[in-house]
Length: 207
Image (cartoon, rainbow, N blue to C red; front, side, top):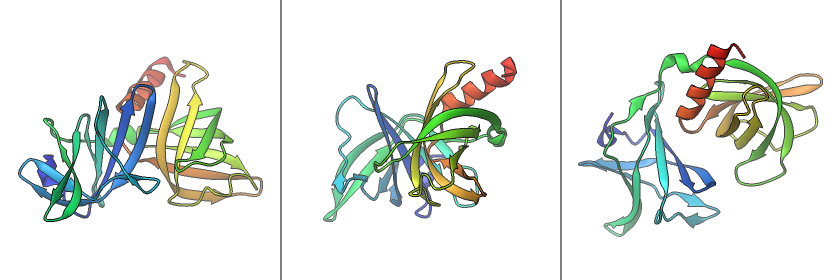
């Protein structure tokens, strides 16, 4: 998919990295023109983001009722058009559709940490399973009460077999309540190509 083919009803998610720092941000498209996508500005804590400096940015476009598209490198700048401010996105690459087979889940069963993206208390949770498109974790009943459906969370754990550090941003899409615990099912808010490789290696190793 070309960036110019993105429609206003898609959801745009970007992952920004600068050295060891990274963040995930979402917005909605305004319109596309030529090879550019104009989106509603990205904000963090009510401040409009600037994308100047040595940044690595990738982007996922979520299409209603379809598989998402992923761009592994995009460039973003702030522009004004007819008195309105937008972030303008461009890329030399075309977006690739996420493979359906990437949704296969692998059990994990190790401890991890979950925290709201906007900040809050870090909760120790059990990582239930993971795929290339999502993750689920378990919290004890009465804990992590701020985790609601549609909340955006950051989940982190270290694979005890390979030592691989998983650090992902996601949105809670399912909450299953039991007598002693709650299971949170999450969908990634961007495409993690490195997670797909990690899962493929685990399948090969049988761990």
